[in-house]
Image (cartoon, rainbow, N blue to C red; front, side, top):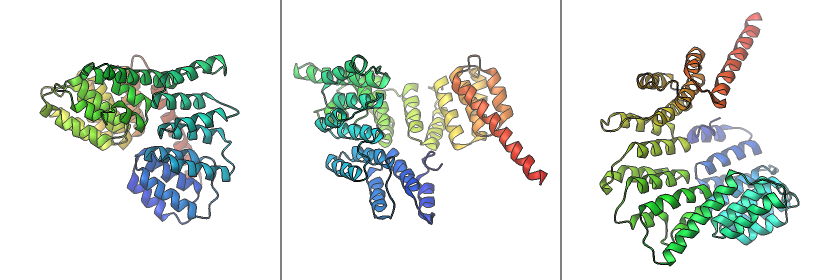
Length: 390
């Protein structure tokens, strides 16, 4: 539970006080550190696990391979593969898919392809892993070939992940070609390429994006910055877990001679939410309300309601609800759905039902929130009935 809420200190305290740790508790703390980008700390915990008298199971290896990807240490990944072989999990598809992904993100494309070719059974995840590995390492035509083979040979239809990887790879490849031909880059070029980098989700891609060293150095070379390039950099940083760099750029936008617009605020708030920094998102919304020149949009209000739901702040949520009502946005799907979720997470079923009734077009998640809360209330009542009957 603490892990899902990214409460690292609480999770560590609980982990340290557990009298007997098992593989599940270790895997949970490893996944939490990896999700927060604390890869060295995660690997340190894995080393402790190896000294425990605990038999490893297949589900821990994908988490550990993710740690290797974060550290971009392919040799370490090879050693861990040997451990997987020792435990007879090397033939497990779940492990193999993670291995392909790790090799690809560490820049060892040939190893990724070897593991892929040796797989007796390949699913959509396997295909997506090798397509992304090819695209992230500049082999975009090879990625496209794998994509075409998905439907023609394996009867597996490419999905959004597959297409996004190939499209992102081509975008980056065109940037290199443009540079080679001596064409001048501008802010619009960067705005097109950085989201492609984020879609591929590889630490290697930012290095490749710039053989100018990093995407930020490319961005820094522009004599003229604008809202598009700055906002794209913020999104790119957040998508790759570099929230502090995104916030630093956000704080410096106006010093660069660029107007900080509502997209800048929304991008930063969304970045906080995506990285489980809910209190920071709420603080940013408070700062936004202090500005007279920028007004919150439906996306802004929906995002801050999500933050309220995650921290369980019904009081703050009701304040946002008042702003939503004044703006007349309570019937919109995104805002109304976020309001329903917030009320449900704060266990206010009456308010949730009222908010639900005001939403004109209800999507699946809005229905699911209300139904789940009604079921939880029914379960609580049943438990109370059993307790009082005794």
